[in-house]
Structure formats: C-alpha cells, structure tokens
Image (cartoon, rainbow over all chains, first blue to last red; front, side):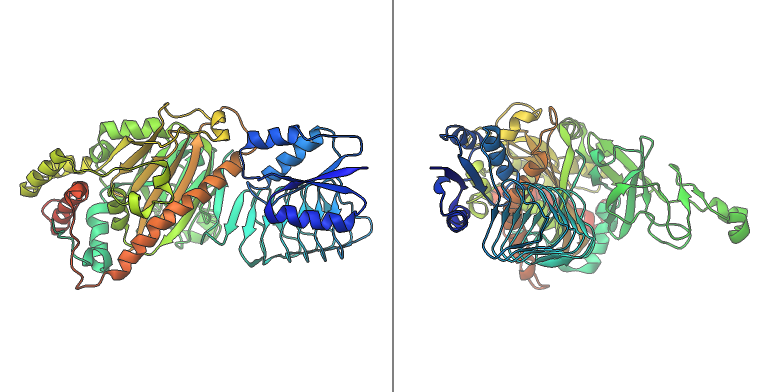
Length: 208
Length: 382
C-alpha cells in the first residue's frame, strides 16, 4: 500500500495531515514531526534516514521561516532521494483550467487561481487567497490566507505575503521580499525588501 | 554622585540647536558604509541636522555634497541610496566630482553674470574614509579626524570594518528620545543584566564594576580647567574606544559562520563606541557586526539607523540574505528593549525634573557629562 510522508511541525503538520486525509483517503499518511527551526544538519539527517519504497511520496508543510529557504531545503533533500512530491489542492479551491500546480505546492481551501496564472513549485497559497488572472508566482513563494494578488502581478521566488496584504494589478514583488503588514501594495517592491509590522520603516538590503 | 545634566539638555529646542553648533558641526559624523558605494555613480543620501547630504562615487572618488541643486533648491538625489549620476531632474543640471555644474541651455535661458556663475556650484563637505566607515564634517575648517578619535581607535575601526562583507541590511527606527540617552545607555554596563535578561544577557554576561582608576581620573577631571581646547580634545578622545568587551557564554556555532572570514578568532563580544553617536558591536566573536548610528533630529527625536553585515563571505552562499534578515529580526528584540526604556525616560522629563544620581560604576558617563557641560557653557570650543 502506498504511503506518504507529511513533513512539518505543529499546526502546519496538523493542517496538512487533515487536508491530505480528505484529498487522498486511500493513501496511508506518515507524519514526520520536524521543526524547521531545528539545526540544519539534524534536519538533513532525519530526512536522509526515512525509509523509502516504490510509490512512496512526500509533502513538506512549513511556513515562510528563513525566507522560505528551510521549506525549500527540506523539499530538495526529499527530491534528491527520488521521492515524488505531488501538490496538495484542498477542498473548495478553484484552479482555472490549464493552470499547472507543481511539486509540493499547497493550494488552500477556497483559494481562487484565475486563468493564465503561472505558479512555481513549492509555493504555498493560503485558504481564501485570490490570485488574479495571468499573475506569476515564483517558486517557494508563501502567500498567506486571504491575500489578494492582482491580475498580472508578479510575485518573486521565495517572496512572502502575510495576512491582510493586497497586491494591486500588475505590481511586482521582488525575489526574497517580505510584505507582512496589512496594506495594499500599489508600487513595485524591490528584491530583498522587508516590510513588516515589527518595523516602521522597511528593512532593505544592498550588495551581494 | 548627582548628575548636573539639566532636563533641558534632553527636551529643549534651544539647547538642541546650541548642541548642534557647538558639538556636532565641529565633529566628524558617521554617514554610511563605503561598501554601499562601490560602483561609479552609486550614492547614499542622509540628513544631518536638517542638512541634506549626498555621498557619491565618481569613478572611484567619493565626495560629499549638500544635496541641494543651486538653481531652485531641489534635492538632487531623491532616494536613500542607489546608482544614478548626480543630476537634478527638475531642470537637468548635472554636477561633477568638484561640484561644478553643467547647465543645459545656459546661454539661452539663464545668462548668469560671470561673477554669479563662478559661485554656482555644490557646497562640499569634508569626507573621511576609515576602512568601510564614512565620516563627514559639516564645518568649513574640520579638525583632523585623528584628533577626534585618536590613532588607536581609528586603526581599530579601520581594521574591523575592513572585515565587513559587501552585503548589508539596514533599517531606521523612529526613536522618541534624545540622542544622549543612547550613548549613556551604551556606556552603562549594568543595565543588560536586567533590561536584556532574556535576550542579550543570555549570550554574554556583561559584568559592571567600579574601576577605581577611572573614578580617580574622573575626580581629577572634575577639578580640571577645561578652558584649554587641546586638553578638552584629549579628554574627548577617551570617550571613544573599542575591542573585546565580554566573553561569550557559548562558542559561536551557527551553520552560516563557516562561510565567512571571521574577524579575529576569539569568542568575545566586541564593542566599539565612537563618540558622540556611533556604536558597533559583534555579539558572535567577529562573525557579524551591527552598526548603530543615532542621528539627532530634535530634542526628543532620534533617527536610529541600524546596519547589519556578516564578515566577508569566503564565497557566495544561497542563504546569505536569509541570514542577514534573521539576524536583523533577532537584533530587533534587543534594540526594542533599549528603545523602549529610552522612550520611557524621555517621557518622564520635564523642565522641573531632578537630575539623575549616577553610581561610581558610571564614571564614563559622568566624565562625558562634565566635559559636555563645559562645552555647552562655553568653557572651551571645538
């Protein structure tokens, strides 16, 4: 009987388990409690020793911690072991015909993905989020529950949009940026710009 | 010992204006990091005491100018940083590394008399590069920077800042406190045990103590005649210093640290205090640095600019941006503890407030206070 590892921590793990139970009741689910904030070497070691058989699949359920790099790292380790990682589309999500949902992407309940969207792998789109037509969502982006992304908007790889954010039509959010303060974003946000409730002014990054 | 600092030193606009003229204008002030200005035409803009300043790279030469077009006073560079020629977007005036301007349609539209034309150029400020640290001086006859910080401090700042990587994260806090509360807080080694008990003090056990030699020197200083500017400058140099501060509780062990060229090799908290308003620290034994610049804006307002860099990367690694972001978020906890207490103190101050009572362990702050009040009273001038 095929089985699927659900890798994650706390509420993310519980939510993913519940969603997969509903989405694929025929699959045996094996939860792997792994805190993304744990030591990287320990995380790698834990994923390296998972027993894998033919037909084993996996799903990583994690938040945007470390600019989404920890979720990407966990996914990369599992993919590196040859494990397939189908996407999770929760009940009630509306995904327009022709929109591809790639590996380890998680579309929450009630989310709406409009026609012409391009969505990368390892993306999280939270419950009730609305992604406008022909929007582009880069790999490993994290879009929280209820966020609105306008038509033609571009969300960079590993970018994070927190609850209460609305991105206007055609606006671009740069790679690795964070907008985690309730607001309507009307102008482009440069790569590696961090607009967060904790800070009155954005944190910005220069150089490489 | 009872402080003699009147509350007006923290809340009064006239006092603040006098402080600007007597203390800040003669002194070198930090303005930014050289690593932000590596490309031709890269620039940073800052406002110091209401004066807008641009520091611009002209083919490798760094220059500081007043960021005001001499034509209609439009700011020339509009962003806090970027890469763009020194060019005013209002009427197309452009400026070279000497501040001289090229005016489009000059003969057809302006017809300045030669005498007036000769005066049309940018106001230039003195700029000093100390490793990766940039300092400007707003006076027309700046004192040598060595006289402000001393040779040993400058060497330490230069050597440590050259360890900085080229990738930097920065932000600004709108501090509702007088800038002096920041330097007083930083020279108070007893507060981390309480204020930062759950944050910084977990990593480094700062231990305040009474330095009897320091206290004796303070007593002598308080009897001294500070009317000699050389003596006053020599004393001021003792307010800046840097290097090892306290040992770390545990050796640094973060994953990313293997990817950078560490500054020195000791598991210590490093601390540099550059009087009057610059603080640099490395809480993880030289693997990364936080640079804090407390920019006075008004008697009760300070722009608290924070930069965070790791030591130089051995080679690029994928998570470097995430490392800087995570550390900036971690530093935010400690900074907020400091900012909150400074804002609390500021709110208590009123014209009739009584001065504080300093302990002998606070001899550094008491010494600065004595020097500062002599400056403000006109006993000496910088």
